[in-house]
Amino acid sequence: MPEFRLPWVSALAFLFLRGFLLWILVPAATLAWLLVWPFWHFKKVGCAQLIGWADLNLVATLQRSLFRPLVRDPLAFVPLSAASEVTHRVLFIDPL
Image 1: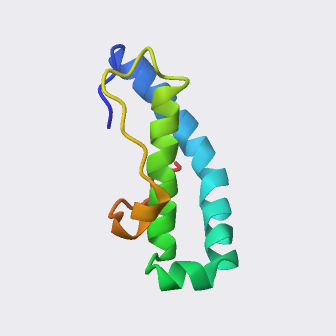
Image 2: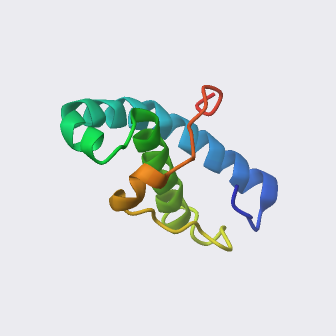
């Protein structure tokens, strides 16, 4: 979790926005993985890894756009070529 300058207000807004966007991101990433399955299978990228990669980049995008003035040290973007090395997972409780 990033370190915010206005801790509870901006963290709560960040979590609500991320939770809402995960409802769009997870089905879109799953569909993208299914449509390009031979490529992902060749690169050894599982569906959960692709969703984790997309979530990491969503967090980086939010930190570098809407929450830019509030986040001291934003996450770096993860290139698609590194998707097979992603260990981050989106949990069932995340979108709630």
